Length: 153
Image (cartoon, rainbow, N blue to C red; front, side, top):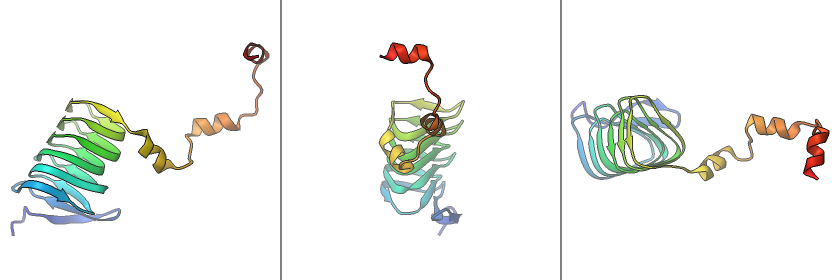
């Protein structure tokens, strides 16, 4: 087997990161339960529901992607759906629609498509936690000024 093949890079938060080397070309569907870095060419579907996908600088994807987190250094033509976040790095390129709770597009990155912020997954991840400014406002016991209280009635 070529040293450019699929191999674990090292332990990640929940296991290992597999790698699809730069000399590999895949047509079809990739599914799995571990983080994946793609440096080669993929056509089809990449589905890593609860995992992270890294599209390396030399990668060329013509695929739809479903993952927890997607980081793009290379080129993607297809729709990206990430439960947590999508990052497009400065040399990254995405042509397709993005659906995620959080998005980051660095200066110099190329993006053409639509963005849908899916708050339902973001709120589910946080549970009942509220942002600090909301908690502070709710905890405030200072009465409203008289001129505001009168205009509200």
